[in-house]
Amino acid sequence: MRLLSALLFLTCTTTLALAEDWPAWRGPTGQGESTDTTLPLTWSATKNVKWKVPLEHQGNSTPIVWKNRVFLTQANKGGTTRSLLCFDRADGKKLWQKDVSYDMKEKNWTPDWYANASPTTDGERVVACFGSAGLFCYDFAGKELWKRTDLGTWEHSFGNSASPVIHEDLVIQWCGPNEKEGPNDLIAFNKKTGETAWKMAQPTGSWATPVLANIKGKDQMLLGVGNFLKSFDPHTGSELWRCEGLQSYVYPSALYSNGIAVGMSGYGKSSIALRVNGTGDLTKDRLWMHPKPANQRVGSGMIIGEHLYIIDDNGAPRCYELTTGKNLWESEDKLRAGTWGSIVQAKDRIYVVMKNSDTYVLAAKPQFEILATNTIEPGGRSNSSLAISDGEIFLRTFKHLYCLKEGAKP
Image 1 (cartoon, one colour):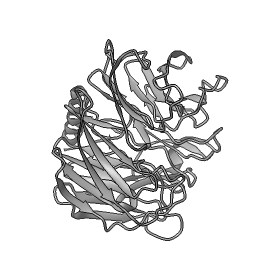
Image 2: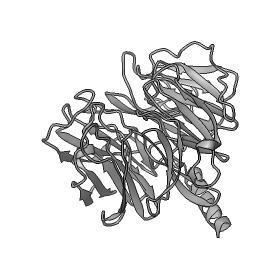
Image 3: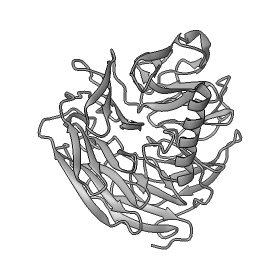
Image 4: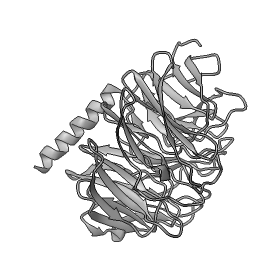
């Protein structure tokens, strides 16, 4: 049965990757991986741009893509209107927009950042999290299927950012964080009805999006919570294992590959890697711990082969040996402008969007090499990440949504 479960999970994941849909934040696996080999290496405002559409309001969320549809969230200043937008992939035409009103004041780092969570889809329905305003589910025509506006207020001075995750018949949402009072709940909902399937309360919150992985034939969900990297059973919410070593502010999502899980804190805090063996307290299986990284970390990294890659908030590129934690890029110069974006990988390249909306393309190898620096919007800004689908890159800045394709002309 374990072998069958592993084969089914691999088949499902491979099918999604080959289809080149990008159905959720960080793609089919939630870890930024793409099988695409035809993406453009370079672009500019006038090169390899298939289309460009203006956005009425800014946001930090990343677009998702399913077949001929692109979905994106945005919010007005102050967050009194939070929206899910649907675009035609062929030309960028906006097909519909669904607005959610929320008149209560919700804490945030700036009044413009009320669209941090990306939507998710299974090809039939689209689910969007609007923080304290609730969780909403629509069909592809924009019809509301269900909503949950009873999840409480999420009050933190840094706002919230966890994106919903669809797993089988469930939508899983990490609700929070709450800074002082209020719940920090991991909740699963029936994706067809919105009814609660299970709820698991946590003592503290974080900003990370849960990541699904199949570990030794068992579906697991990894999430950094407080001082721990934890694993939960996505079917029941029960905790499977935990590893101590993280510190409070957890923004990056967890990573998993070849029996090794990685958790990273933000705000100059620690990072850990462990070999996943068994259940319960796995702190003894920790391979390494970096007590205090050089800088803040908001975006998520990724594991490629035997190496772990991540770009710090200040633009410092890092390549760690996965099993030892040794930094191979320690002496390299910073990438200008810094980043909150999460890296994505396609072929032998790593792509990351910087705060000034430039995108660096790095070689996915232990020897540091910048392959390209692409300026799409001089003077622009972005805190988003890239979405990749069938030879096309979707890039969101504060002012526009772009579709990039090799050989395209605006």
